Length: 85
View: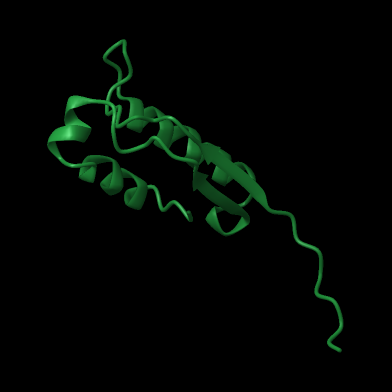
C-alpha cells in the first residue's frame, strides 16, 4: 500500500439559482460581479488550483437572454469562469 499523501486544503466555491442573469435586478453586471468575487476568493487561497468551483443548478433558464440563447449565454460564462462542475 502506498504511503498517504500530504494533506492539502481545498476551498469549495458554490453558486446556485443564477437563472441566466447577465445583469442583476438593479441593472448592474451580475456575471461581472460574480466573476470579481470568484477571482478574489481564488486569489485569497492561492489560486484556482486550490479551489473547486461548482454550480448547483437553475443557471441557464429564467431570463429572456437564457431563453433566446437556449442557455448558451450561461454556458459561455460558466466556461469563462472555469467552473469545475
